[in-house]
Image 1 (tube, rainbow, N blue to C red):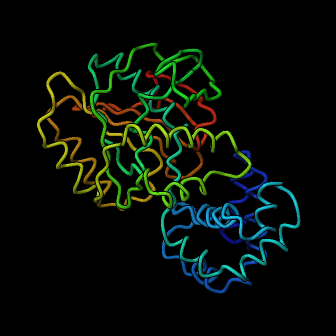
Image 2 (tube, rainbow, N blue to C red; image 1 turned 180 degrees about the vertical axis):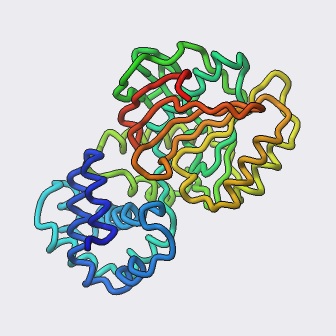
Length: 336
């Protein structure tokens, strides 16, 4: 039976990355050469898919390739072709401890292309609740998506954002365009158990390692987003979502502002208690509030963009999206 690396290779290939799929398949075949990593994967206590175990593995190898001190691996990643089994097997044998240590930490993609879907949801919200917004992001990583107001977007022909921004996001758009409404962001802050500092070279390198090597446009976009974050540091807290969100919602909100709780590809790492706490905190809020999610379905067969408004907890499935934001299949606000 195929292991988690080979199973994820099928998903990755469907997402458009034949190179990363080949890395994972070679890793599955050569895993016997890395006993520490093999034991970690075999004894993984959680769901390997939900915990993105294969993406951790690929991130570790990409990090080693980017360092340049393993020429064969660096060449394989640069050329995206070669003797996959020979090169990956040698690295597994030589860097087993590094790979296992890397994989113990959760992924940190902080993919800014996902902010296009979030912006489209904010435009839809503005059509319903005509107020400026304050963003509260759960699982914010380095906080790059808290700066979405400083990016430029083309959403199905609708232009929004900073027209001078070097971060330009234009996903393949399917369906009608979103409501062409202005979005005014008056505040943005987030929380993460292990927030990454954009001023830390090691943190920057970790983010870059999680960009798939055969998608250079993502790497360029991340480079520009990090530069913007240097100039405009995101407001990040280190902490647990279950503690942070109720405390933030209890604070007095600026008058005439809708608070928007946002989370993108972080819910899969929450336990049942955290999910219940988030739901209860939102239901109990006595101010204008909304929730935007960019998350896998429970069956992990699709990524849904959802918008929920309170106090009636009216939920809408706005779009089905590519996991990294490459395309958005827009359904609109009428979809329940």
